[in-house]
Length: 130
Image (cartoon, rainbow, N blue to C red; front, side, top):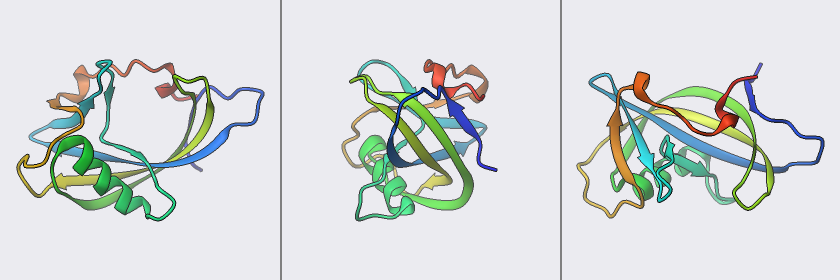
């Protein structure tokens, strides 16, 4: 059974697929901070012409400015959420264990940080498992 999290509403959600990376080194996990100082795992939406694996590697390049490789598949989950624009989504998320293959050499879209997993506080209520 696929874990489901987020708040399910009584309206039809837009369907979306996404892929996210879990990158751990020396007991720290890579997170990215957006311009609103929100903390996320590297990753995002899957484009129509790419696989989940291609998407997670592209998102790491864009968000972290680094080349990565996939070391394994963790699993899938379903997330219900409302975007900042008020759009309601049902997102199927694919999670992968990844590692960096390069030092930062590309321009990163977000601030990249290594965090102790116990210190992370994800702000979105939708990250709470139901």
